[in-house]
Structures are given as structure tokens and as C-alpha cells.
Length: 182
Image (cartoon, rainbow, N blue to C red):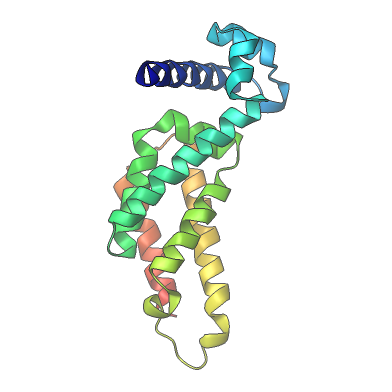
């Protein structure tokens, strides 16, 4: 019985997500009402309230799912270039979800969380050739690389993935590796 109930919950959440995606293509999240979301998903309000409080909750759940998927990629990777490539491929594999998260919800928070995990797994000290002159700039260099990577990924998504994931990953890796050699 629990498995069957779980399937119903999964299905309900799936159709509410799909309805939110449809409505987000037409307007901003702040303009979407629970009534129109339920109507689009063909569920009643009680069903919605059983799982969520407001439409933003759906978006936050989607963001958390993206973060979890990217975290799995991170755990599988042995070097920074692999992390970058696998992350770009994951984002490209679900274009609709990536567009919603990164254009409607400002997914830079997800990328920052992932990059913090990357930093913990691949310490800056192991990535950058530290000279005495460079030590005071390590944090700034890392922040520059992080924010720059986020900007490149957001631009790539906003431009409908017009460049293959492998090329974007290669560009980010090149820039990060050049930065690490400063």
C-alpha cells in the first residue's frame, strides 16, 4: 500500500511541476495563483495543499532535486574537469528543468552550493600554484572563477544550449585552469 501511495504522490508532484513549467513560460512565478496551477494540473486545491503551501515550494523542491543530481555527479568525479563536464551534461540532459531553475528562479544559488562542495573536495591549495605573492589573492581568484563559471552556465542556458555541453565544459575548464596558474 505504501508503494502505491508513493506512486500517487510522485505522480501528483510530477503533474504539478509540469503545470508550473507551463505557467512559467507565460508569466512570472509571483503572478501564478494556486487556483490556476491546480486548474492547469487538473487537481483540486486540497491535493495541492497536501504537498505544498505556495507555488514557490514546487520550485524550491525542483532546485533541491537539481542540487542532489549535481551532488551525485560530484561524488562520481575524480578531478575538476570531470565535475565541470558531467555537470554541464546533466544540465543539458533536462533542458526544460534547467531553463526554469536558472532563468525563473536564479539557479546561481544551486551552482554556488555545488561549487562550495567542489571546493571542499578539490581544495584551492591543490588546484592553484601558490606563490607567496599569490596567497593573498587565493580567495578572490576562487570567487572570480566561481562567479565567472556561473555566468557562463546561465548564459548558455538562457541561449537555449546553443553550444554543446562538452564545449561549454571545455571553455570553463580552460578558464579555471588558466586562473589556477596565475
